[in-house]
Amino acid sequence: MRQAPTAAEARLWQALRGDRLGIAFRRQVVVGDAIADLAAPSARLVVEVDGGYHAARPAADARRDAKLRRAGWRVLRVSAEDVHRDVAGALAAIRAALVGH
Image (cartoon, rainbow, N blue to C red; front, side):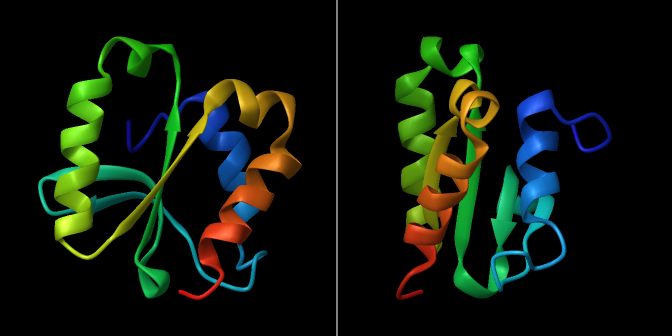
């Protein structure tokens, strides 16, 4: 996945890259034994872009999120559908998560 992000991940990355929200994001960041879709290391925020695959694995995602939180990261999940339909709305959710980092 590091070399071939999903279409939704690529779209969100284009909107975030270059410190466009005033904070640096990175793609496909290794956090412990997980790889985060997007992360803002200075804010300790992981952004996961969830496609249809995630609908069948809510318990696994919850365990992974809990592990990331125990490691000091906040986790924001946005749906791939929302990114495609309303990237500005996804960015607003990320901005809100960054407030008070």
